[in-house]
Image 1 (cartoon, rainbow, N blue to C red):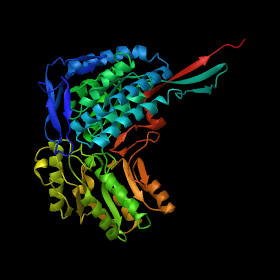
Image 2 (image 1 turned 180 degrees about the vertical axis):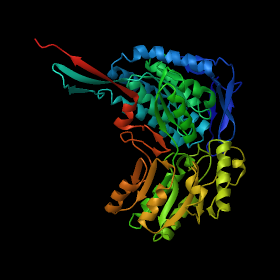
Image 3 (image 1 turned 135 degrees about the vertical axis):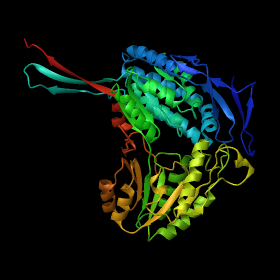
Image 4 (image 1 turned 90 degrees about the horizontal axis):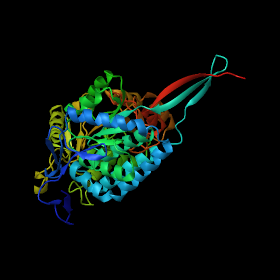
Length: 503
C-alpha cells in the first residue's frame, strides 16, 4: 500500500492520508522483496508528531545468512564486469534516483524529521557520492615493480574485497547509503546495506531503483531489523569481507571486535566533539555565520558539528552579541515549511539526553543563556522537539564539554592564550573535526600541527567534500571515507611474482 502525502501550505503540521492501513516494506534481497523469516515487523515513527510512517521487516539471523549467501553468489559475476561497465550502470542508478527526488525527500523528512529542503539536498548528495565513485572507474591502478631476480617482475593488483556490509546512521541515512554504495560497487564488491530502525524506508526504496537501472540481482541488498540481532549475524560471518559503518563510538567498538573473528576489513566513522575556535584577528561576521550553521544544521545531528565553542576573551562580547541575535531568530517548526530553520530530534531517547545534558550543566554551574527545553506551543507537544540552546559560564571540566551532544546545545567558553585553547581542544576522547577562525597564517600552521583531529576547517563551517578524506582520530573512527584514500578502502591488493624466460 502506498503512503500518500497531503501538505497544506500554512497548516501547522503535515497530514497523512492512508489507503486502508499503514504501508509495509519488505526486505530487498537478491533483486526482489522478501519477507523476514521471523514474520515480525517494526513501526517507523515520525519524529515530527510520533505518527507511524510505515512498517518494516524485523529481520533475524536466518535472514542475514540468506542475504550474505546471495550477495556472495552475485559477487562471483559482478567482479568480472569491467569497472567502466559497473560505473555506467551506477550512473543510470543515479538517474533513477533523481527521477524520484521529491518522493524520496518527503520520506526522508517524515522518518528523520529534517527540513524538506535539506532532504532534497540529501537525495542530490546520495547521487553525487555515487557519481564521484564512478569517476574512479578508470583509475584503479596497481604497480609494476622491478624484482631483485633475473627475468622477473612484481605486479601488485588492486581487486575487490567481496561482500561489503554497510551500516548507516539515522542522521543522513540516504546520503550515507550513497557514500558507501558508490565506491563499494564501482570497485567490484557486492553490498548489504543495513539502515537504522529509525530511518530505513528511503534506503529500502533504493532496491527497486537499482533493479530498474540494471544493477544485477544480489549486488545491492537492503536488510532491516535491530542492530543487536542483525549486526552480529552480518559482521561475524566469514562471508563478510568488509564492514563500513557510520554511527556511535560504542557501536563501532562492538563491530570492531566482531570483525576480528574473521579479520574482516573495518572502516568506521564514529562520534565527534568538534571544537570551534575563534581568534581576535578573524572576520567576525563570517565566524558568527559559520558557528550558527555548524551547530544547528540538521538539529545539531551531524558528526562534525560545532560541539564546543572557544572564543578569545578580546572578542567574546561582540561575537556573542551578534551570535545570540541569530540564535534567537532561528525558527523551529514544521520541516515542510520553507521558513523553518530546524526540525525535531530523532527519537525519545535522544530528546531525553538533551534534557539530561542541560540539567547536568546547570548543576555543574553553567547558565542557560537561551533555550533549554521544548519550544512553547501545542504543535510541539507531540514529536521530539528541543530548542536551540546556548550555555555560558562553562568551564573545561564540565560534562557538556566532553560528552557528545549530537543535538542543538552549544557550550561557550572563553580563552586567553593559544596554548591554552589547543590544550582544551585536544582534551577529548574524540578527534574527528575542528573549526578555526583566524587570518594569521602562523596560527593556522601551528593548529595544523597541534590539533589532534582528522579534519580542520579554516575560516568556514563544517561540511566535507567528496574529493577530501573524512577521517577521525582517537575514538572517532578508523579507515576513513571519501576521495582516493576512501575509495581504496574497498580494494584488496594481490601481489604476483612473475618469472619469464627470455629467448
